[in-house]
Amino acid sequence: EADIYQTPRYLVIGTGKKITLECSQTMGHDKMYWYQQDPGMELHLIHYSYGVNSTEKGDLSSESTVSRIRTEHFPLTLESARPSHTSQYLCASSDSTGRSTDTQYFGPGTRLTVL
Amino acid sequence: DQQVKQNSPSLSVQEGRISILNCDYTNSMFDYFLWYKKYPAEGPTFLISISSIKDKNEDGRFTVFLNKSAKHLSLHIVPSQPGDSAVYFCAASYTGTASKLTFGTGTRLQVTL
Image (tube, rainbow over all chains, first blue to last red; front, side, top):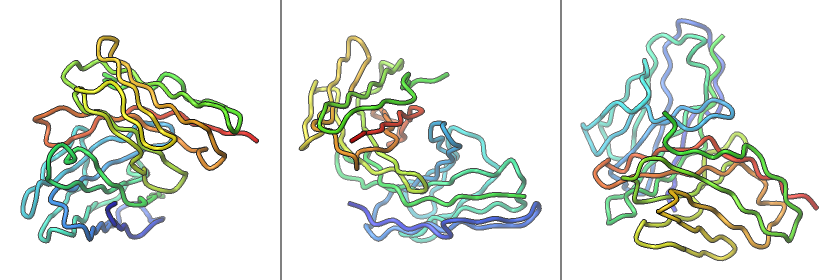
């Protein structure tokens, strides 16, 4: 089981502020992901990374950006938060051995509210 | 276009009985399927998975069945316990998608005493 951490768990912030959501994992997983989930809806992939210095946009368009400078760290940044960014943001990681690459392990999530 | 569908938004089952959660998919390229469990304000927890080369996978109280011809999978929980009350998500992927998962909208399971 992966150990994956997200901070903060809850964030309430005003419109126009810059925010960074932190995600770290201690399992040495190469692949990391960011999902966005609204209540009662499915998880939507917004960013993913295959490894250091590799980032790709996901299936759902997002104004956020990510970086992967270290294997264990995959922060997500919003340059100017808006109320439409209010959602739960979930970080996940998976390893690179065999078919288990598709088993993703999730952090506890960050509940973001933009006023 | 919803490629993974969980048509029952909620399910209520008595403690000790069987819970059956269903999932349908439309993309015939999917070849790996997973179930996750999610409590409020927490991230999803991986439960069990199945490859398309199998039709059944069992892990303790949890069994996943896959019917490829019907593009349908189900999760059976026997016996159901109050701690199983959560939202269950079905997810799917296929070879070559870099492990990207497509999720359903979830089914809320309530296990009553």
